Amino acid sequence: QVQLVESGGGVLQAGGSLRLSCVASGRTFSTYAMGWFRQAPGKEREFVAAINWSGRSTAYRDSMKGRFTISRDSAKNTVYLQMNNLAPEDTAVYYCAFSWQPIATSQSSAYAYWGRGTQVTVSS
Image (cartoon, rainbow, N blue to C red; front, side, top):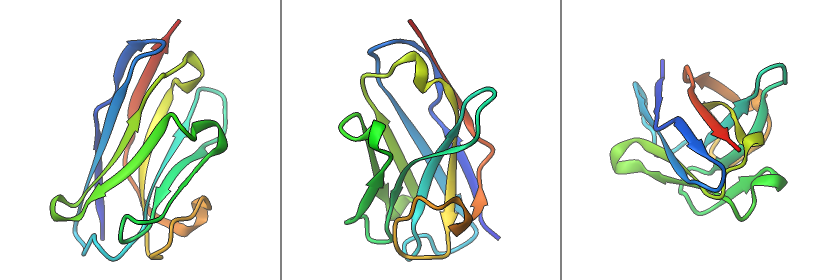
């Protein structure tokens, strides 16, 4: 069993930045990939970013490239999502996810455990 707890969400104006954190517990963290997904009101959950077990390989949704950065600190069992130049369309609940696979993937089916999410609200 793996527990994931996200934090760092909030309310901010367009153009601002936030860093989300996700702390994992219950399993060896350093050998598995992690990902971030988001779900906006009335929309399906979508992939945001993923990072492989070593942190040396990452994947992003095209619209996030250059604005979002995923990273991990295995010593702290934590994965981060740095979000810059946020826009109102980034408003969503952001979820951290744990995959049994070592590679970064955008496929939600590859993730076995999910956090409860953290709300990000961006006003114009």
